Amino acid sequence: MSDPKTLPYRPCAGIMLVNAEGKVFVGQRNDSPLEAWQMPQGGIDPGEDAEAAALRELGEETGVMPDKVELIAEAPGAFVYDLPELLGKVWKGKWRGQTQRWFLYRFLGTDADIDIATEHEEFRAWRWSDPADLPRLIVPFKKALYEQVLTAFAPHLGATPHR
Image (cartoon, rainbow, N blue to C red):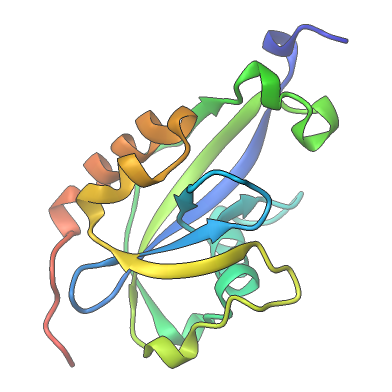
């Protein structure tokens, strides 16, 4: 097996989706026995724009279509995390972790527009959560990443008036 430190990072995009009350969408992963929740995220396909990937992943994981969201902000730069060594088997040992681009979107729909029973079902449950709770809800090895995402979007977080 090759040294994990020599492996590349998987390009990835994520969305922090906030509702009118300033709560953030989180889903509980199907493939983890842990009580771990995360925001929608996933790989960027070759030739795909990061924001397009984020919107595609949002639809694949939550059923939320692009007409139900509005871009608020894009985090400057990328955030990087390494997989813990025991999880190095993920992605068949091809990646050492992920480099992620993050986007903050306002949810314009209703809870009825969310359907996690998608073709690419990744979540077994979902809920709206206070942004400050995100670091304690995520798997421990992504805690620092979520803190960075929260810092990047802090000026934009909070309840928004109903339209």
